[in-house]
Image 1 (cartoon, rainbow, N blue to C red):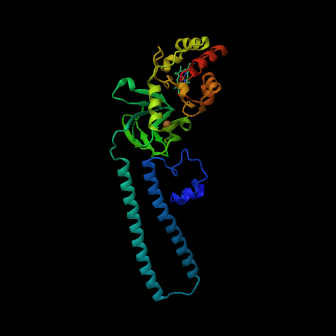
Image 2: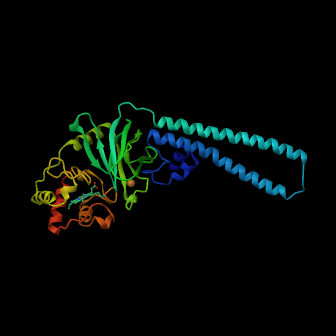
Amino acid sequence: MKRWDALALGSPLALLAGGCNRVQSVLAPIGDQAAAIKRVLDLMMWICVPMYLLVLLALGWALWRGKGSGANVAGDRALSAGLIGFVVLVAGLLTAMTAASYVTERTLHAPVVDPVNVRITAKQWWWQVEYLDADSSQQTITANELHLPVNRPARIELRTSDVIHSLWIPVLNGKEDLIPGHDNVIVMTPRHTGRYRGQCAEFCGLQHAKMALDVQIDDAQAFAAWRARQAAPATVPITPSAVAGQRLFNATACALCHTIQGTSAGGISGPDLTHLASRRTLAAGALPLNRSMLAAWIADPQRHKPGTNMPAVPLGQRQLGDIVDYLMGLH
Ligand SMILES: [Cu+2]
């Protein structure tokens, strides 16, 4: 069945993709823009693969013919005519590919109606994701995860606060750079729900490879519910250990780098942790988010992501446990 699906996609390459995972594949687009890019790829494959074979055949024929006796005037004349035809064919096909690529580029940048407005700021080495809204109480901020509703365009402003990065969510669109002092915009219109993955596609330093983005496409209802949860202030801790954890968080260096909305923690050099426990990954996809991984991360960030801009803050076992209790309660 998979094989037939792949064939139906119409690309020789899609056959190969049949067996690969589809979370982060240009060959299995789930958005309008990525689908448009893939159509150009398909066209180029359908033109270039046969042309390549044709050239190889011609080469084989020339080698085989070269072994025979010398000139054959009538044959040479047919050969010239054939060559002229071939040149015209090549020029025509190249023009068709250029035109297709131009038209696709235009559609990728076509204006959109009623988009979800998001701003992604790349940092060494994580993504800050803001949901923009005319109503400032609905403006929310998260990190390393992008939630979008299906069948509605998202207009994403791209910024960076340090070096050049590049956002690449292959199932949704091509790459777009995030350049210091120059805002870019990328549009993505997802057509399928599910969990996908993006990553930084421009070498940006030590942990460039661990700069992933967890992408979740939901139906409109689930997306609205997620937005509403994100707009709520942080859960107030109740268990004694979580209460102690919050006190510690605010008393140590954590609060200097991290914001937790509705508390005195207001640092901005690290990811916003207001709804940390609702995420699925830690440190831009470097680790899955669960209790033990969170404890391991806080105890020694450099071990899991060498070079990361989060230092290890000295904590006793008990204190670490309290902070983890507090953070795991922030849904
Ligand atoms: Cu990067």
